[in-house]
Length: 220
Image 1: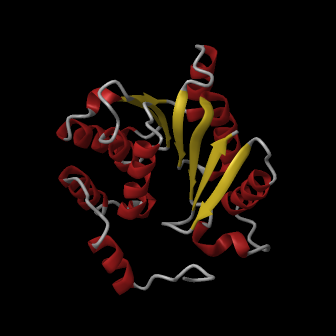
Image 2: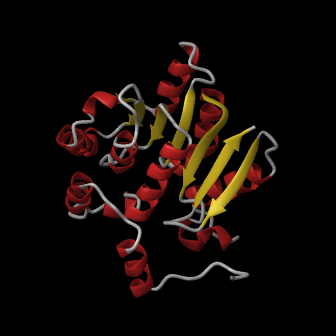
Image 3: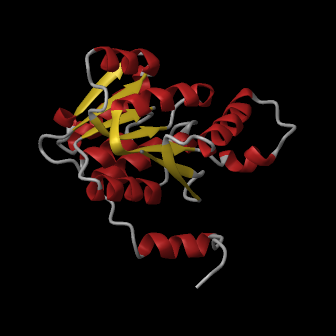
């Protein structure tokens, strides 16, 4: 038993991965290629990916949103767990990164489950709402530009069904959420978002210290 959350040093994290992570070979290859990029830190950790896959399974999700694709790890880990009639609506604006993503989606034979939209995510989400998909999604993963987190959450809340899950990444922001003097727009946006979400009675939430912090919000 413990009255607090245990901290993870490198050896303890290695133990965690060795005793819990069952990573698909294509996911491993994707991580290896992403590590060659200057922006490699934007990719979610493998243990976080494993947790997302677990959520997809326990919620029996079929329709999911991936807001912020990068090189496609989160889309891929979700698509691998979806049933044959499930799909991911993936939103990003970067062609170079998503070309890497599509290569690995093809390798894993799940490209037919992922609908990639190269456009500002707000436009894609508004289009889905206008087409009548309100309340039709089971799960949304938000991991894009932090300035628009509140908008991405509001659109996801409209699109996700009652009881569905919205997962928001980077909510601890490397500890910078504690710095009241940090005037970086992204830091301020996350601080504001976390405060608003805590007081939002439309959802039940749990903030989990995995990766850079992940909040789960269940639509009530």
